[in-house]
Amino acid sequence: MRRLALSFMLAVLAAGPAAAEQDLLLGADMSSPAMTKAEMSRADVEAMIKAADGKPVDLHDKSLSGLDLSGLNLRGVNLRTARLNKVNLRGADLSGANLEQAWFLKADLSGAKLADAKMFGITARDANLSGADLSRSMPIGDFKGANMSGATLVDLKGGADIKNQSMGLMRAVFTSVNLSGAKLRGANLGRSRLEYADLKDADLTDVVLMGSDLSGANLTGATVTGADFKNVDVSGARLIDLKGQAEAKDWAERVNVDRAVTQATN
Image 1: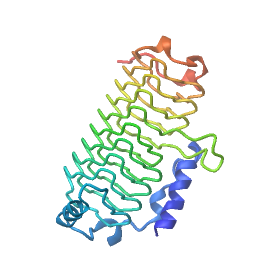
Image 2: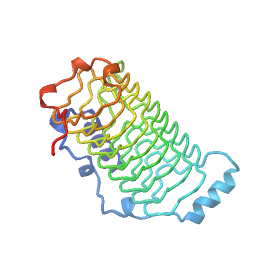
Image 3: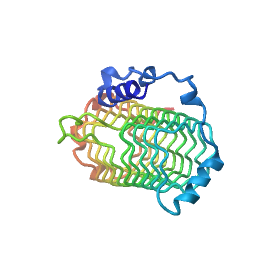
Image 4: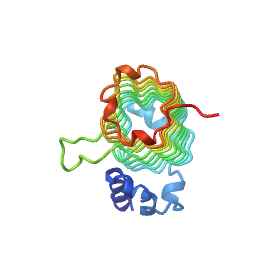
């Protein structure tokens, strides 16, 4: 099941806008116990943390869905391919964690520490990451519908690696994500999916957006000083009251400029 689900994930991450409706969730039985039940308790996890004596805990491929793991110290934890759907990790420390190919559907990660986390192939649709710290993390995964309002994503590495032919189209999928007030200074979101994202009042200083899809996104009041807009699709995007627009890079190289909204309407 995990192998099939991963194949769908890779298809979604590599797909262009024309394939946006392809649903990776078709690759897994979302009603199965493996996706909805936990095989361990919070007490079991706490016991593993204590036994590890400060070393990273190995929870790879575990079913932990629905657990309350809020506030735990899980620095460097290995959660590769684990299922954590609807888990409560509010305020938890997952700095440097391996979250590759893990499932976080509707998980609560608000205020969590995720700096330097590895997130290749992660599925975090409709997750709550409000106020979380994802600095320097690599979220090459599906965050469609997630709440990242007020989150810190400084130096995020979510752009496609165009130097790697086998992975050059893998990207962050932030379709319909709430990034209002988020701090993205210096983030790499080149060729990422940001359709209908809410970037109101977000800090996009020096963000690499080259080749990304911002169609329908709301950038009202966002700071775009030094942001790279080369070949960015802004069809239907709200580009109103932008701060630092004169200092944005390749502003004239945007795509579908005539379809963007540049003035507020009553």
